[in-house]
Image (cartoon, rainbow, N blue to C red):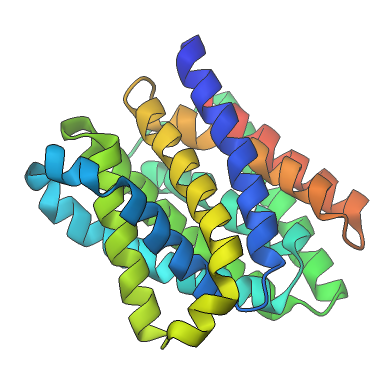
Length: 265
């Protein structure tokens, strides 16, 4: 990974941890994340008129399934438990599933570093699940794990799609439409929007900017390397959350991050 790609991913990780913290502190989480998606997409939407992502429409349709489901599940996970539990699990499931899927379906031979990475991530996830049990947050653990499935889905689709189009144009359409869909499904009306628009604007700006940086990084480096390095955000997220059992959650998040780095080695 070159220096530019590294800088892009690290900047994205900081933004990601920040907006997730703000989202977790919001009072109407599904309305907040849906409006944030909508706002971020609307701001960037002119790019789609200048350079329409028509060549990747089928990928946009597929990734919308994952992005809309992701918003709902993330909001439910945050509604059910602490950021220190839900955030690292949601982010840690993705690299683990991608790697295991490569072994199982693509018959890829694992290296020593890959095996070490899988073990570290597994231990980290199980530690967080156990911590969630101790704190009676198993519902949150379940929703966070499901959120990780959607992250796996949209990461794979977006990494494939972005090779043939403008990252800004592509994600502007995805974010704008995904936000509208979730607001419609969740019945987010004008009253709820008035209550969440301030954090929604900040989250939307950070979420869109951070993910655009990731999409540009996908164009400069291997998807597995980008996805793995992004896991630094889980360590940052646990640190800034300042919740109960912070030390145990930090240790587990650090294992997930280290395991992700090993997978990309």
